[in-house]
Length: 281
View 1 (cartoon, one colour):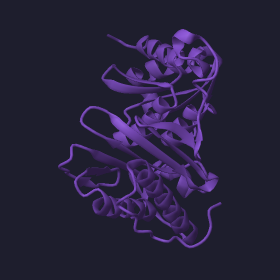
View 2: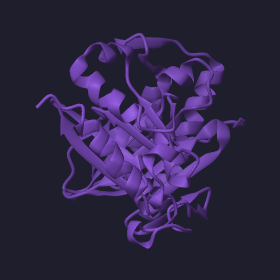
View 3: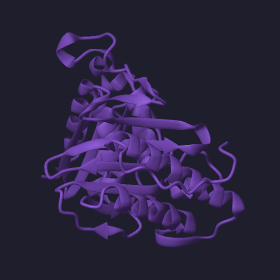
């Protein structure tokens, strides 16, 4: 567990974007953890499992303040309400505590995450899981890393046409991480695609933090991932890192819902086909 007094660092504007992203998620995550150790209460948002705490707000406020100092021309979008228009054409997307339900109940499976995007695509992602001291980083100009070590799950071996490594592994041979709120299982338009994809995998995992899941898809601990209706802060950090690791990502609209996927090339292709088989159109 991370211990010690949080330093509330003022970050150096001279840091490059990847250094800045790493420092921001590390500091935000440590701040949230120390606030939880001191005691927190929560407020319900959309459901009993969709909650927010003072730590979410404090961590987002910290990241906002540092970005406004270090990247004053960039836009900023945060899960807890931050919305700052920029002039550079770039926007930082903040998820101060992803997996707040886990965080509030003492689980280690939560993280701080952020992404940097421009008008066409995501440029980088950073994910920090404080209680396991794991920091994933990657983007268009930076190979995907975990604590500084380059990730190779999608590059080592396998079919050349699929890019090698995990890219060549079929969905039926992989465990799939996912999330679906129980109420959505009562809606056939959502439940049918989800069921088709879920039953195509070798095993299912549902841990409650999409960014933690996607970091583990990038490093090979999890085989693939799929989920519907993800906001940008739940999707873009992990998307950037999975792609930087050599994996694949995709999105498809089925029965009026957007479904997001990540993993190896073969698994993502097969996930998409399975989800599409649940279409009522």
